[in-house]
Structure formats: C-alpha cells, structure tokens
Length: 217
Image (tube, rainbow, N blue to C red; front, side):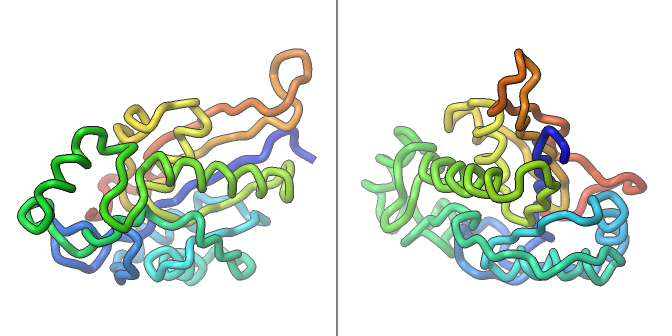
C-alpha cells in the first residue's frame, strides 16, 4: 500500500447558463462537446482509483464524459457535501441584481465575503468545513488509494485550503479553471519522523498533457 492517499481534483465542464449570474449549488447543465479535453483527462487520470462526484449534474455528467472517452472506472460515489457553495436566495442572480434586490444584505456580505453567508445560503468558510469533513472520512476509508473527485471550483479551493492550511480569504484567491486538475497527497506515514497526517500539494489548476488551451468557464 502506498504511504499516501492521492487526490485528483477535477473541476466540471463549462456550464450552460447565462454568463454573469451566480449558479452556486443550483443544478445547471454543462457542455461536454469538446471531446479532446475528456480524452486528455482519460489519459492523465489514474486507473484503479476511487471515484467520487457531487450530486449535481455538471459533476456527474463530466465524470461520465471521461468514462466515455476511454477511462474505465466503477460508478462514482455521490458525495453531496462536495457540492458547490450554496448562495441561497441569490442563486440565479447577477451581482447587480443582488445589490438591487437586497442592498442591506449585499453590503453586509461584502464586509467579509468569505465568512458571511448570503441570505439563505452558506459562506465559503462553511464550504471549507464540510469539504474537510468528507476528505477526512475518505482518507480513512481509502488509505493509500488514488481518489478522483469530479467537483466544483469552490470545492477544489476548499480542498486546497485544507491541504495548505489557508484561511478562507487566501483559499478564495486560488484560480481553478473548468476541466483542470489539481493534485494533493495526504501522507499516511509522513515525511518527518514517520509521522502521518501531513499534506503536500503536487499541482494546482493543471491542464492534462496534450492540451494547449483551457475549456471555457
């Protein structure tokens, strides 16, 4: 068994929704027509991995597109707590519409946008907490395995925040493009005096080999 559990974080394909609106945890569709991206992912991701996705269509559909591009893997485990940040009453609105609809809540939110919650929603700090809980559980269940997680930009920023010990403001600053791959390793034995429980980050926002441009956001 490997001395580390390696996570392969894949952001879903570009969404099919009006640009400039916040879709958050709403279940929007995605564009899986660019087969070269999925073929590259199928060639870059590990065989014999544990696969997980959120419950949202854009995550499950992206995983299916990778499967159809040539990488055979079992049905992914659905982890609802790996979903994108829930923006509550603001989902489906533009930032301008948010400010016009509820100017007081909008102003309060921007006092600390990574820790304050939108009306009826959750903060990015909340996303980090729930993502951390899933990671901890799956690290214990699948020690020494590769885990491929097809999820969301906010979820991947949260996972990188866990690995790097970042606060929510720092974590939010990480760029995560659609169909990019970020890799983290949880060391079961550790690098220092055999201690486990340490993280290292292998790559962030990577393009699979053979691609020269990114998919649309």
